[in-house]
Image (cartoon, rainbow, N blue to C red; front, side, top):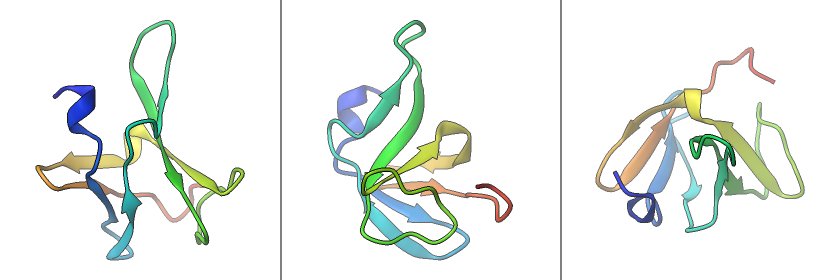
Length: 81
């Protein structure tokens, strides 16, 4: 999958059955040495159980369960802080 194909996909939390937002073109945390995506950065107004960082939520790549044609399914453990 190309990086450009990630933009515009809806992000859904499988446990909460909740739409979290839409991934934009620049909403990624990329490791500069390896070029691998480390996390999705989602603009946020309110989030429960997730870290807030300047109105954004960082979802580590390990919590992404499936990337489909329209959406990205994430599963964040309840004990994750």
